[in-house]
Image (cartoon, rainbow, N blue to C red):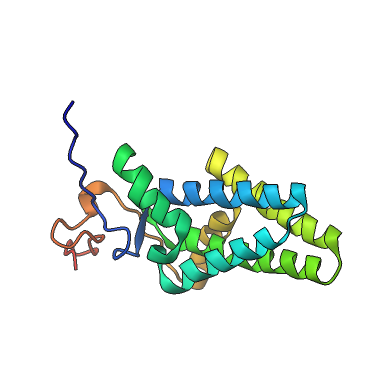
Length: 176
């Protein structure tokens, strides 16, 4: 059996304006599942680890986000690249996730386990909802607010990707 060569339209670690639409869902599956596990078992430090991991990925890039690396190095080469989308809405959703996961961890640290469990459960619920249905509340909030603050969202079609540099073409048709 001959392997089909895999080519990417966008480099997952350099072309940060776009992301494979399946990558955030993979990340949401990981975050949601582990948050649910932490709430069910009461092992709340896992919420802090998830917050730290998301914060590291947001600060230093996808190359340092463990679920991102797992998706781009293990899953995407086998499934192929999914449709590309603007990376800012999922990034905003991750920022909200970090904030809520930190608050959940602080709740547990301050001996308020109901607060910690409620916030951890909220993250688990919203992340698993997004992973299973594609409805990402944080992404939706960003998309709703973007026009109000003058942000134009990227709508990326495969033909709109520059073949030379693999980034979205500008309105004038140029790539870089």
